[in-house]
Image (cartoon, rainbow, N blue to C red):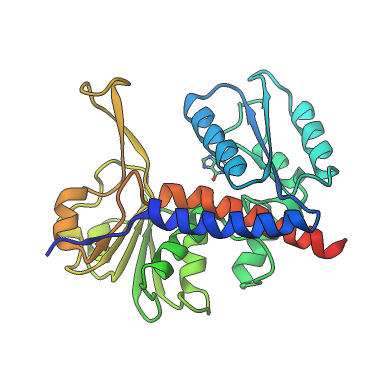
Amino acid sequence: MPARIIDGKTISEQVNAETAAAAALLSSHGVRPGIAVILVGEDPASQVYVGSKERKAKELGFHSLKIVLPASASQAELLAVIARLNADPAIHGILVQSPVPRQIDERAVILAIDPGKDVDCFHPYNVGKMLIGDTDGFLPCTPWGVMELLRRSGIDAAGRHAVVIGRSTIVGKPMMALLMQKAAGADATVTVCHSRTPDIGAFTRQADIIVSAIGKANFLKADMVKPGAVVIDVGINRIADPGTKSGFRLVGDVDFAPVAEKAGAITPVPGGVGPMTIAMLMGNTLRSAVAAQRKR
Ligand code: GUN
């Protein structure tokens, strides 16, 4: 039987509606959630992502600031912008779109962001809090979005074997931590596969839940999936497609049609994890604004 489609677009709309309602209430108490998104340079994919974040923030009633610096901007210039935003009481979340140009040290940029405004959850302070299971901090947007997709689809990871493919700092590592956390909806046994794992299929065939974040188009084939498994596709890969206006289209890490014939549930690309990432970013910004309101 074909898999149930986990519709990230619809689920993200539910999350966003909750965030917008909470933001309206908070605004009526004098604190309007505010986010600043900084783009350095003109990378076309980053321009699209930053535009979507700015648009979504406005849609939810947030104060939204987009700051674009030239590709030639120095590290000192970027750090000066961050220092100004750290001190701005109207801004509760600061995000520097990655990647940044070569002359800028991304680690220094992350460290410069006030951990209380680090809505990406990239600062080591917040990464550490997430790892120890501290629930009053931020959660990393994409892995948190995956956990919400599972929870809101009625899929409980407790006691299940989850296999994460990819060990990036943004997705793979925090995904592992959230899935294995001693917490409702989590409590999974987690295996992490990566570029040096010799036979990834040997692991994924044992998985009740597969989260693929490896960045290779159509990597996960049907023969790597146990019948009935839940398949979450975090990949966003551009492949050439002369039939489209742009000459390319976006696909995930999963060979979708054959895997959907075998899996129990699956996320599409686009319309799966992607819209959840932005929804959780707004959720973190709301959280930060709530904390600011409590301190008033
Ligand atoms: N580039 C790709 N994904 C992300 C993200 O989640 N946050 C930031 N800041 N940059 C990114």
